[in-house]
Length: 167
Image (cartoon, rainbow, N blue to C red):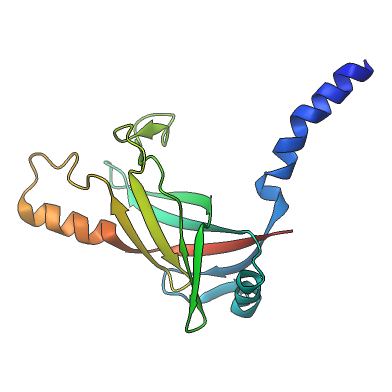
């Protein structure tokens, strides 16, 4: 019994150490950079102190039936910049993920199974700049005007942001 308990606790320890619950949201802003909660000074201090920072953002996407769906993403920041009392966070490149609103598993699909498919720079101002490995994937049958509009939208988006520091 003692061995089983030790094995169980050993398996749970990494989950407890690296879980989101070890972070506390200290700053939140809307898509226009307006403060929802927290204090930008506390976030600036955390960055300057070298604290681990996670950033979360919310996207509102219209599905095929015209319903507005909300997606929330979180990730570790990998490179932080402070400029004019704003924080800019680069995130590590990830496999690009696609959301399928007609499938019960929703966000459980990679676009093309290629690493380094998507990167972003996210700011406390609400602006998120994105780059894709192959931004033209899936645009067959679209007009050049539709493609240009999609690229413009994808490359610069406004999002609500949440900033969390390790407790």
